[in-house]
Amino acid sequence: MSTMKRFFLGLFAVVLSWLGIVAPALAGDLAHGGQIFSNNCAACHIGGGNVVNAAKTLKLADLQTYEMDSLDAIKYQVTNGKNAMPAFAGRLTEEDIDDVASYVLDQSEKGW
Image 1 (tube, one colour):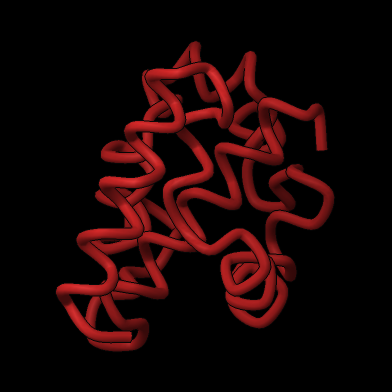
Image 2 (spheres, rainbow, N blue to C red):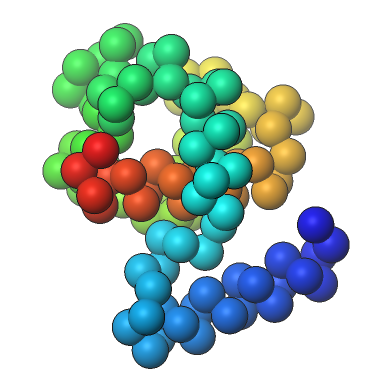
């Protein structure tokens, strides 16, 4: 997808969120984010859990506790990794990371 097209789609999502039509987490492509999650994250985070550290799940309450309940925080974590979580920079595109972050936040808001 071209940069200009992604910009306008993002702008459209922001306008819709201001109007209360869609949630801000829908800025990325959720279907694509789900695929990325399935292929890269589900082994450790199936159903929003965490097989490595059960206290740090992708459930909304845990994301809030650890100040990870924003797209920027999730994208940073996916890009750079931390502790047992590997960095996905260079393995996933920026678009992939945007989409998977949107998917994770959306799923957390829905309760997985």
